[in-house]
Length: 184
Image (tube, rainbow, N blue to C red):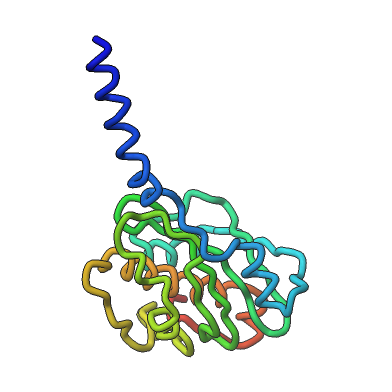
């Protein structure tokens, strides 16, 4: 009996280093991303209510409606900032988006929880989103190069980019810019 217990304890001890690979990788805290997007002093958050018409656009982009009734975002200096989550393969990826003039100004993976696909966190991948907008069918204006072995993470971030751009157009800031996402 003691031998079995010792083997189990040793087996669990040997697995301990691998458990760290399944932990959340926090590349930047969401509140720091928001603050950085506004020169260190973020504005008070706003709420976007997910009304039935807004949820229709969300469903077109995400393939499902969001469970929340409202989303928090920050607006100022002609931009909106969004911190959004989407499932990669089995766990959420948290990303931050800065949208200005109907285009993505900046995208950053903030928290990555998957065991594969972490390459999406690198600037060489994230920089592809800069300057993208939505075209009339709620698709991105240009393609995003994939990463071998990270297809589900790449697809999740593509959806989130589309969502951030769409949601920006639903805000007073987006309406003032005349952002038209072609879904009306």
